[in-house]
Image (cartoon, rainbow, N blue to C red; front, side):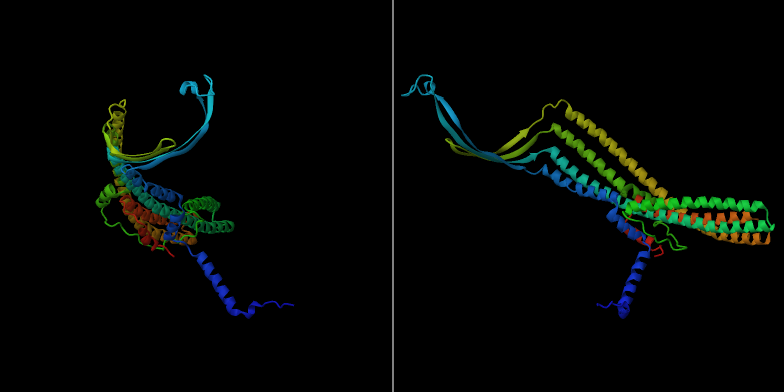
Length: 458
């Protein structure tokens, strides 16, 4: 009989296993921060992946545009064997050989071998359309790089917004539950006082109404938190983990420089939407030249080598080199029409650039004002929170001694919790406006998440 192993005989192994399990539990319980979620979104966000693939595809544009300036080299040929039976009329071709009659056909075998190939090269000497298309291809690639840079900025702001949306929803739920707990206490107190005759039924009814309202708010807060977590999950491509909250009493920094003009100037020149629109205008200008090339001549250097062998004829090799040219004379007004179209599209691109500059300036202005007003709002709400706590404490004391009624306490509680929700939301909005300000100026980078991450309670 095999004896059973007793784990108690190996205390060291038991301790090690317990230590590993505790480490795993601690790691699982550790909240994720903003930088971690951004790294996860880089690997899993579908929108960002689309932009990355578009950039990879656009990187081939320059090679394709250059191909129109390089000499195409091609080879062609055939190698065939032909066999068959041939009928010959001797009276028509050869007269009347012995043993034949007039009009008689003589059948004979017919076969031959044909082997031929040609190698040719054509080097463009002058082709204005191909040159402009090559210049366009470089602009297309640069525009794709600008689009990708904008997608990178967009990912940063989307991750941060989703992160703080979850924190906002969590704060709302937490505050609502705290309000529910406090309202429950007030409801119980009002009922007890009514039963012993020290208060009227009105206080109990008011407390019950406040309790019912906060219960409804709790259900709404739970639903909102679920929606915000789902939005975050769509970006990071997995289950939304527990998030590290802001540390209590954190101070959000003012923008540097603390003046609106440099930010607006940067937005009008560095914003990636503006850069993309500028490149789009250059592409439209080049397209006018491409279409006008329809009126221009083309010239190319041509060279070829041909080998031809056929049974009965022998081998024939030939080499050729020269210049070919073409001059368009009339195309049914198609070229003129295309030029007019491209001129109109160039005008549209110019207006799109102006619109992009104005939108970038507006975004920078709104974000800058949002940061500064947010900082002022945070300071005001911090003072309001202190005042609301004092007011609630005073109302509770007044309620106990009979100089305040239940509705006064409920209103003071409601004001305090509303102030707390507004304060946390103001902090989040101020941080987000700081990120949007840098995005509008075209200077937002992943490293900008570091200072925000330092404000979180890891």
